[in-house]
Amino acid sequence: MNIKKSIATFAVASLAVAGLAACGGNKASSEDTDLTYPEIELGTTGTDLETTITFYNGRTDMGTDTYKGKNWADYIAEFNKLYPGIKVDVQTDSNYASNALTRLQGGDWGDIMMIPAVDQSELPTYFLPLGDLKDMEKEVKLTDEKAYDGKVYGVATDGQTSGVIYNKRIFEEAGITELPKTPDEFIADLKLIKEKTDAIPLYTNYAAGFTMGAWDAYIGGTATGDDAYMNQELPHTRSPFSDPGDGTHAYNVYKILYDAVDQGLTEDDYSTTDWETSKTLMNDGDVATMVLGAWAVTQMQQIGEHGEDVGYMPFPISVDGKQYASLGGNYSMGINIDSSADRQDASMIFIKWLTEESGYAMNEGGVPIAADDDDLPSIYEEFSEVEMIPNLPAKEGEEDLLNDINSESELGINSNGDKKVQGIVEHAANHDMSFDEIMEEWNISWNDALDTLGVEAK
Image (tube, rainbow, N blue to C red; front, side):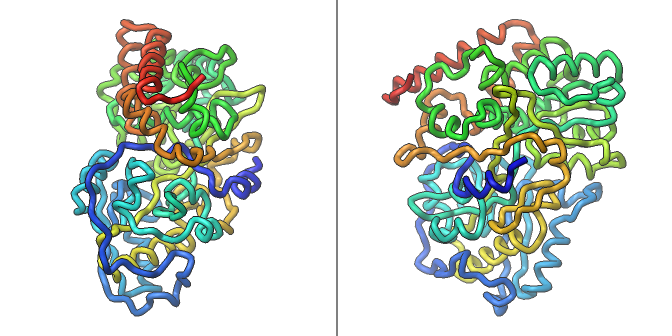
């Protein structure tokens, strides 16, 4: 796995910037800090600060008794050894993706938040610039994901790839000795699991919503092997959901889900799935596979007594015989532009500490974001032959084009697209619409959006 080379080459590259344009917002305070992220020397800068900051995020699991990893209280206790005067109040939300947008627009979310789906052009409305892009590139990876007009407004908690969580014991019981590399091989393995074990072959996690939208993350570099596809080519492509005939691209990503449901290889009733319960089901071997980003692996390993059974494999699509995995940032941490100057300083210091000193990324199974950290967590042991590629950012002047097409077409690729993917599950379970009919509907919506927006496409 040539991850070091990939990260170094594409340090400013980004995954698709998901967008639901936020409206309104607050104006910058005249008391904004002059401090920048690159200027901070941990243990020296701001040691005399006495303030309390609020950190709003979606990691509800890190405050539960069943969570076996380091929780927020552990991290903050370590931070306070270095900065005893900065108190960190953590607020978590189980419906974060939706509620974060509402709170962002209302301005009542505190000082640090994991930035929800907003257009890049909206970042300066809500968030404090952490530094110039050219300077931030030297400090952290994937800086371009939350950059606008030469400024960076967020730092990812960790880097993530797109793959499949699986239970090693169940695969062994089913007699699967090689991991699947194509959609056909994956479906064949799910059939073996159903035939030879008591596990649910593929758990859709339909009811959680956000877990359905996760399927969108695979249609870029993972399914095409092309780092320019997601943000540069897709917005100029007509009928992108058509079958290319070679087992790749978006068509074959979503078809895996349709075929699994259609052939009875998922849970009996998709409406009764439960996100929190699913972690235990995977740990116990009651579920064989789930299609989710690497961020979820450690949660499922740490929830029960069988963490060693939970593994992570590349998504089963090969391009000319080679597998790829899109590399991008998890949620990025941003600072409230309307917080007081001392809270902004304290927030920036905490973000830099969490990124560079806490070990958070490795603890959570993520790729460390600090520019000089090339370590990888053990969950990537099955990715030795996989090339990780960050999706290149949009071309200059087209930063919001994909978001505009998403909004006009109502498909929400990588941006609140859970309902359209839930539709795949519904139609496959009800047998009332073929997969090709669904994809044709999507193509029509996409092409109409291109025409309405006057986008040149082929």
